[in-house]
Image (cartoon, rainbow, N blue to C red; front, top):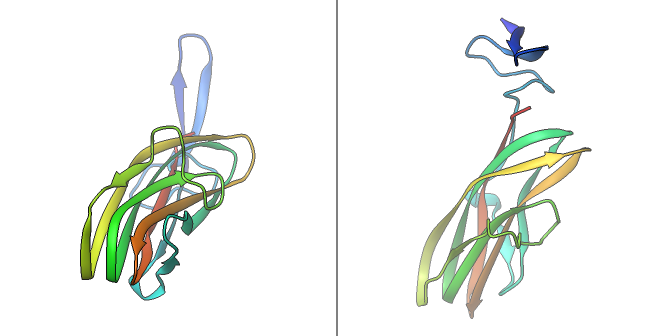
Length: 156
């Protein structure tokens, strides 16, 4: 039953949590709500060497959210020396809290794709905020693009 209320006792005061009691999606604003965005390979974002770029983003309302993401960095005729992915509330900016993920490889490629997966990261928001899936590739010659997905689940 969607919109089910569950009472939890913390020893003194009951708390009500809105959620879902079946295999459907939790409603907007309820615990368990999912917000996601994906960019397919055919719509990949062009990357400029050593410059952070937004691959995609989600708009999250106030509350606690667990956010995860994955980025694919694809190159053609490039000398690739490394990539970084991260989840950030600042546009085109990699996080500096240690949650960024590096993919260090040094090679010349004709055509290849490298995957970077970001672990779940908590965003505790007091107002509606955009969370970005950010990629950065360092390369010379050729071209590189980024595509991937970001998923957020409301914890509370």
